[in-house]
Image (cartoon, rainbow, N blue to C red):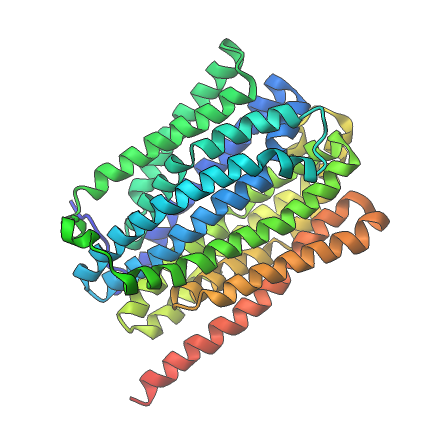
Length: 446
């Protein structure tokens, strides 16, 4: 049974599609679970409980997005060493990443739990939902060690070309998660506490399944010597991981600013924005998944010095996300009220979602392309441009909200997304082309 997958040899389109589909199915399962979770919470506990869970989305993204970016940055180093066949360095990088993740997890867990209530108050969280928001947040942040553990395991596997194992792990854990949600809510009446506990249990199962696969891969079987302190290796990982982590967290600050203004409008707006966020996260998954595939493909080929293959990988990736845009963007434009009705009960929240969705549907192509170009920049060892683009996204979101929310109301939240996506796309497109063409010229004149 093949344990790792070399993306530096073979037909590019076949390799990317073979890598893409398990990632896409994995992410879709996660997002479909989130949608199912929203339906279960909204229909089982009511719109206020849905608002409480949705109100936490920007905060959880701030913390968990940081860890996702961190492990994603680490995976680029893993993939480059794997592509270059430097297996000793690969093992040392993984061992160093494990130590770094443990230390960062301790700090994130303590900081997020301590800061949760003050931040919720700062975001103008309604008294109707703040207790449930706190309950949900304490459990999710208390279980960060499981979340980050799974993220690191999944990142290692994908850097080695294995996107199937994370898919299988998520498939099984998603089924368990939904079953636990139904039991905890409708049988044991555990409320949002049960929703949060179910999430942590499911992630723990995913982590264990990925760990089982990692232990079977000979080239990354770690020895005690691999854990010896290596300052330069740690610095290299931090230089790639921290900018990507900050990019995610900085982006989430812009989302939290939007959440602040939405919360100030009332609980109906909070519930509507929660549903919109769930659907946006669902419909950008093809772009996100393609970005992950682009990252692994580019990292391995960059490590191997095969820059022409990176250009071929870009072309295939852009075709994938364009097809996804035509399908999902159309659904957002044509049936927004139907989509809203699957999650919400109140007439007001449904009406708000129906205003929001078509705007993002028309412009979904911006974020799809952004995922591809940003992942390419990161994979070529240039994580600072994506980080700067994260700052740009935050600034644009805040500016649009400040300038237009009083004039056009709730739909300003949709426009803040689309304009931010376009601004970040332009920056990452320029950086990707400059860096790749530089490498292509270096090969041409050798």
